[in-house]
Image (tube, rainbow over all chains, first blue to last red; front, top):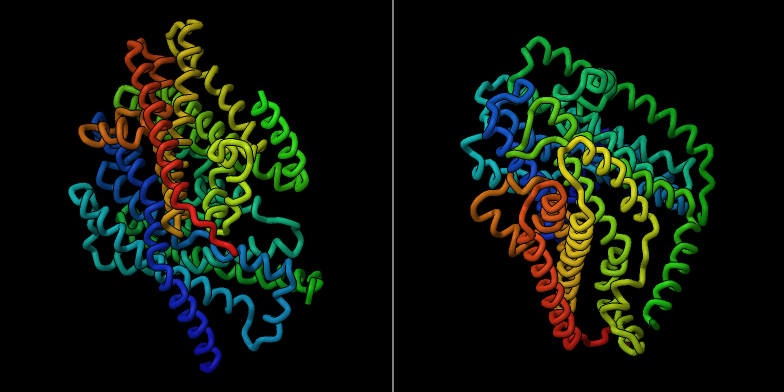
Length: 268
Length: 261
């Protein structure tokens, strides 16, 4: 068991090292996320010059919501699905089946290896933004909220991985699933709460979202940071996060079993 | 004349090659439509809670978003794919084939891919556009529509000039793809009302990186009783940037050293 864990750790460290070579790219790709964010922040800045409260959020909370949502949105966003799809399509999966590592956890290590340097670049860029907007950034000082926030974010990242993996596994059945990701991204933006805080939406939309795993990726962690959820409710939401992770782990296992039976090792 | 005939041939060829993968062709179209609807939805929800953004009402912003989408789609349809392939031609040395052709190299490289998928994006925004215009107390005269169309075209020219300037840098630098996606993100700012910028940012976004001109100017011509100062300003800035980018391309081309063999 320990030996295996070390192997997974090694895979992750390798990925981090690889991405370290393209450090400049990380910053550029993070700037790509920051430009739209600056647009949104300026938009809210203007909106709050006429009013002091929008749907229960004051300016500080709103600006903080969007800065955090951008960072977390990147952390939970699907990635490496392209690699997995190519593995399945071109028969590259065969060699992974022979390795003493489980494909799911092997890819999770790569996923984490991708996210770690990205989040470091993200923290630096976000830090600069917080510095610029510091008069309207909400600093949470309650230690309990901060700890629960980090716990919720970590669970959210893991949940994001499960969803991303489930979507990648569709390539057992779909000829080309890149269009699928384009479409689901729009749904994600609404349901996670990265477009707007979910409680600003019409009731129907937010009620649908709360029945799905997506708000647990982004909306709830950010709300915990903002201190807008009472403590006993936080515990309850984190329970839901665990529940969704377990459900998706199970679903992924079933889908994988079904898919591998269909897998024909093209070119293998 | 020769150029027009040539262009029709390209359009014919492209519809064949793109519809070959039918499902991804349609998924592309649906994805485009959804991301447009996402922006509309974003503003719909915001306007549930507020009245105006710095003097822009909901219907005015809808018009702005539609115009921004039309400019975007026009750019992507005519130039997008062609322009993004230029760095590869420069890196791999396939520019040789193009430079030896009896046609203007910048023209040829920019228009050689026609993206039919984007055609929808130039048409469906017209529906919410007309719907929003009906809710606004403005008189639409023929001359206004013509001026708006001309400003839409100058918006496309600005988009194009910036893109071509960026990819021209790949005559010197290897990594221009990352810069290109940065540019794409920058021009998503066109959909916000100009009133959110003030002071220096406003000047920069009008004259240096003219994201304000791209969609805000045509929208203002259409719905505000602004003077035609906007019209001439928009037009002359776009011509200026186009001229600069052509010069820059010519300058960059001189630095081209065929890489392969």
